[in-house]
Image 1 (spheres, rainbow, N blue to C red):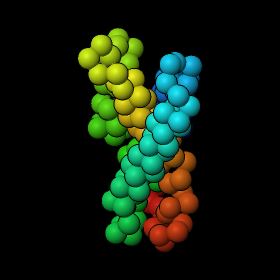
Image 2: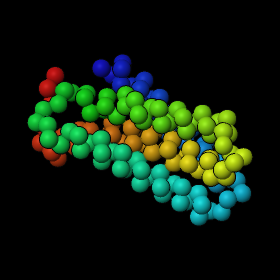
Image 3: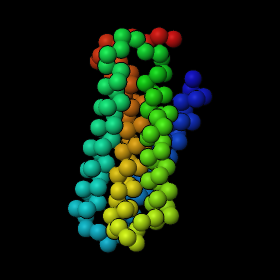
Image 4: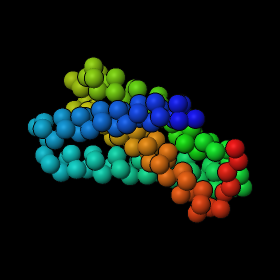
Length: 137
C-alpha cells in the first residue's frame, strides 16, 4: 500500500511547499508583515477545520479499513479541486488586477488544503487510538 500512499503523500508535500512559495511572495511583496501573518493564521485555522471535519466523519465508526482515513485525505476530490484552482489562479494571476487580495486568498486555500491533507494522513493512527476504532485488513 506504500506504493499508493507514498506518491500521494509526496504530491501533497510538494503542494505544501508550493503554498510556502506563495507565502514568501506575500511576505516579500508590498503588504505589511501583519497581512502575511494574518493570511498564515487563517490558513492554519482552515487546515485544522478541514482536519476536524474530515475526522468527524469517522467518529461513529467501530472499524475502518487499514488505509481508509489516509486515503480519504489524500484522494479528497474537493481538496484537490480547491488546491488546483488556487494554484492556477495564483500562477496565472487571474483577478489580480481587479482584486488586490487574490494572492492571499489563493495562498490560504492552497495552504489549508495541503496542510489539512498532510495532517489528516499523519494523525490518522492517533485518531483511531483515541476513538477506539479498530483496523481491519
